Length: 225
Image 1: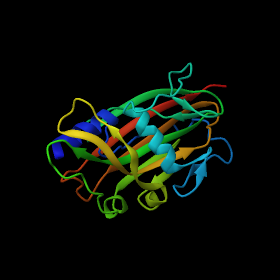
Image 2: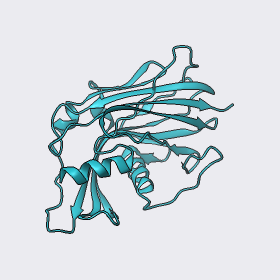
Image 3: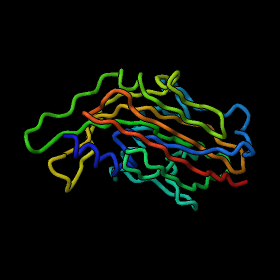
Image 4: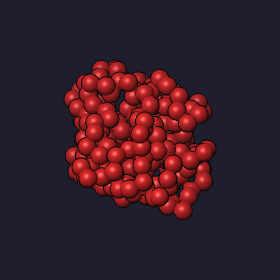
């Protein structure tokens, strides 16, 4: 159901593919020494990338609540932020957010995601899409001008899982619930205090749900002392 897919994508942050971008200033302070994005198969800040992404989407769709800090960010555990993303239509229209982080806060950020859903009208539940959709992404995510995720390493940040229990969707017939996740995302260690920029361009080159989705979003991120 292409129309429902596209709308759910917007509800989630521009979602049937989430491309999140952050444009960088070369003069921005560098990330703290040793700071990096953790590959999908590893554990970071107490959880795997897949677990963090499940938490991020359950929070986004109102299935769970988490505390917020003075900056208005959702924060889990010892200080991991469920990083906000611009809401854009997925047609390449640029989006931007200004984000403030406290010193020593790590973060979780989905980059390009597909969600499968079930339906109330007899339509069969969505099936996972081929991994080749993600293997052929045109994707570039940079922090302060340094490439973190590209087409060459995107599958290092790939997760695929079913939601158990499912995430219910209310008042959006015929969609009944979100049943699975496939996507590229990162967990990242705390950034050095100062102003940073993230930049993400992402677009599928192989059709997903019969469509193509492009995101060109940016963030200016201020990390407090």
